[in-house]
Length: 110
Image (cartoon, rainbow, N blue to C red; front, side, top):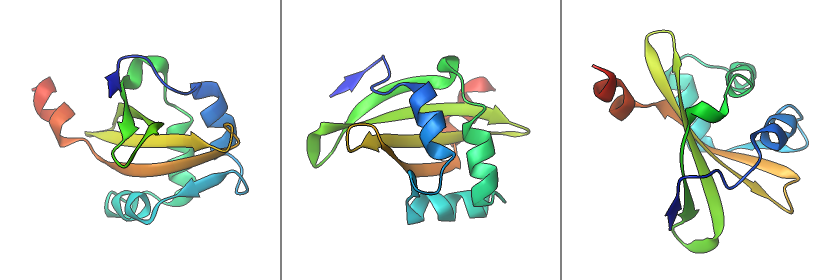
């Protein structure tokens, strides 16, 4: 299922991503960030710049339709960054599942 409103509070997500104890970054997201030259600290800094206007959809997880992912895309320098995350355990843990260049957004802007 897809919806046009965020499943999670961006303010809550920003609070959670700042702490090592509540932040989990999936290996794929770390690899994507690394390929773009971002360290984990830079991922966090970039995440903190997200705004509601950067949101573009929420979608349920493919293998569990009770878990939602929020999708954001934001311009950073010469590229757009695609971010996907979910909050778990009653919104006390954030899991960043994707951090990569958003090539679809870049081509839509041209």
